Image (tube, rainbow, N blue to C red; front, side, top):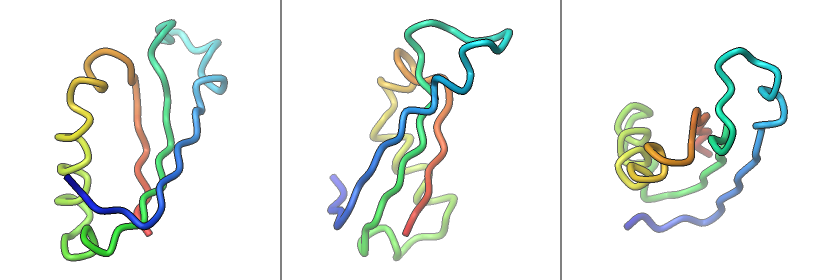
Amino acid sequence: EIVMQDFKIEDKSFLHKKHKNHQEGKHHLKIFIKSSELNKYNKIEKTKKIYTILDEEMKEYIHSIQILFN
C-alpha cells in the first residue's frame, strides 16, 4: 500500500488504434503520481513498486504504461 497525495490516469489507447501490434482491450496508460512516501526512492525503485501493485492488471488489461512521479 502506498499513500498518495494525488493520482491521475490518462488513457492514451486512442493514439495506438491503427498500430500493427494494437490489441483490443489492452490499454496504453499515462499515470501521474504524487506521493511523498515514494519520494524516498529512486525512479527505478518507484517504478518497480507500481508495477508490483499493477501486476495482474499489466498481464490482463494494460499493453503499455508511462509513469510520471511528482
